[in-house]
Amino acid sequence: MHKTIADSENSKVRYLTRRMAAVAVLALAATTMIGVTSASAAALANTTWSVSDNQAGATGVAYRFEFTTATAGTIGSVTATVPAGTAGTGDAGTVYGLGAGTASLDTATNTLTYTVTNPAAVAVGVTVYIEFTGLTNPTAGPYTSTVTTMNNAATPGQLDTAASSSVSIAETSTVVTVEISKSLTFTNDTPSFTLQMDPSSTALSDQTKAVTVTVKTNAGQGYTLAAKDTGLKTLAPIHTIPAASGGVAVGVATADFVANTFGVSAAVTPGGASSATVQGAGLAVANNFVGYTSLGETLVKATKPTGNTADILVLTNRLKIDYDTAAGTYTDSITYTATPTY
Image (tube, rainbow, N blue to C red; front, side):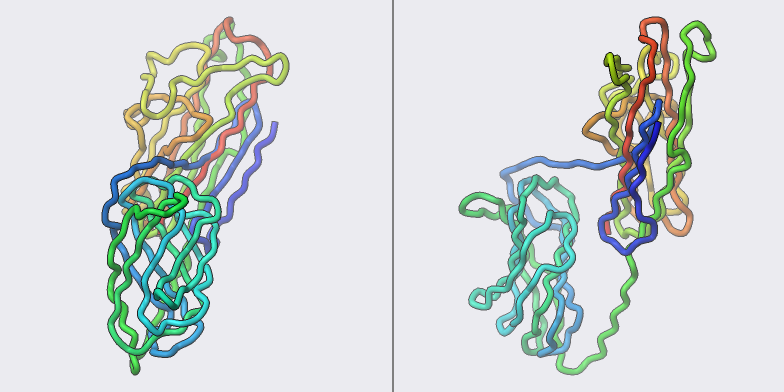
């Protein structure tokens, strides 16, 4: 048995995926996936614009835009208006919430455009951050930008739009910039485990194993922790042990847990003021068990930073068998992904 873990603790990244995969008789890990479409447009929320240097005529400036989507859809590009006189290249810098892409400045229309290389569905409420670099500031004055998300049609249409917060380009001022590194620490105390089971023994036919994962982050809007698995099965001939339920929406009480199924229950203890809670109607009930899914589902969601004390999530895995479960070595690979929202 084995388990692979890919994670990066305390690194300076915007979206940090902590992956742990374990191939054993059982192993666990996590991910988040979201994607829907909608035709109704709305105003972007929390739309802000900031600059790395607010001096008039300053060169090599980065313009940073952040907003929260209001309409689900496939975003093909994002535009942001800038003041007349803005110059430079407007190259793509750091981007979160969208896939890789290219960026440019059109001085004829005074518009910055970020174009997604491979557009994908983006849900409502996703925070997007786009940085355009290599710009030269215009003359002094207060300015706002109109930020617009566009779909990926042959003739792009508007999804959402909103005016940003005001930016002051000044002739004389003292610009104070404090950069706080983005950090997320994700740990798992059980890289792998093995259960020896025997249908002839009550003690050995119904077993549990608790796995504790922790998350500590300064992400301003919290994080999500998700999990998916490949399924508990043998290699050849193939035998499988089904999930206890179809996912976090439907739970199975402890007394109703049936033989020949595999499930997990969850309990979270916020270390600080992250407001972390267990997700899903089935999983949110104490001591309920649910099944892992192959596409992955969110187990925990936090809306604020954790503070200096990590949030603790205890996952209690349960496997129950009888003589209907074929003998053999069953393995699973479960992946956990922690995704911060800065």
